[in-house]
Length: 424
Image 1 (cartoon, rainbow, N blue to C red):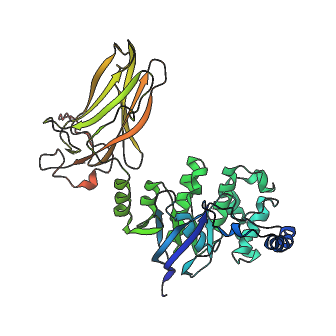
Image 2 (image 1 turned 180 degrees about the horizontal axis):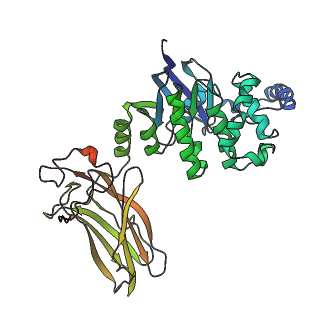
Image 3 (image 1 turned 90 degrees about the vertical axis):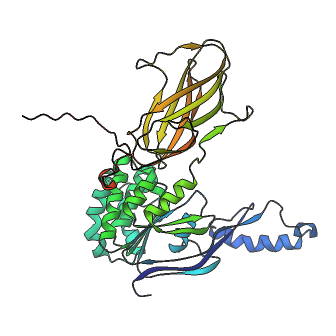
């Protein structure tokens, strides 16, 4: 295998759903179960041979293959149910594959679920030694790392408390600290970091970067595309249990986000299915360029008009029409509404209206943006924000910054500002 730390070939995992899946058994259950099974056979009803129509099978993973070199940090992304966690559970030897195989060279540390690998009756300190022993480490090795683990987890006061009394955040702090500091050659991290607070998430991401720089291998499952793009040069996209794309993180993430973003330049709802509340119903949303054409593609220099059609259902309603522009990663660019700076609104009689919001040219950087729309009412109950359209902003030879390299403009906005120059 050379410098390959993980090799996966035609790996598949089949689950049967619709029937109870037995969990871990007690000794009493293990003894009683064969006797109960024999009794059921003697009292067997031939009609019971009919398969439960509620049960069916699902491939959580289906014939996936890839390799990971030593020292690589690989992102694993995909929608919920794509097979990400199942893959890590197989690599962690928590579950067995139905078909195929995976070869792992090196000591594996994993952080898959809150509390995985911890004994609830043992204290935090005792669980550190337990996890170290599971990883095959000697007591002297764990002793050297103990204080560093406790300091990183920030739970010094509770290190002698049974972990069953820990909050989910404390579990994650200690679990990540143990997994990252006990020097596994391969670190598998699932989305559990979302349980921790923002400061600790940043701390964990920094530690994973350090682990990769030390030459250890990391597989990082996350829905935080920004973190995956920042930490991982390579990303694997799973879809319905299969590898859909494997390559540079920026390319794979961009492909995934575009597939899961609204794509139309206009949307119109049937009245029965339209977003609505007691006071207003949305009818349609369009993005329009400076020539009056409905489109989703704009030059960075031109104005972008967002037209929102709606019907007021009651007399003299005070409505606030909102737009929110965000990136495909979910980062807000700005939000705006039709009221003045004090929030004052005009009352509108019943009828159909169009509100137009204009985003000026030379404001947005190149890239894809999601248009979200919401409606607020005087009663305080309106139509919640929802993504409805996406727009693409590109540069042309007429763009304000066309002659500059794009590396200067890494931000979301790229305004053309007025400058005054005077000799002093």
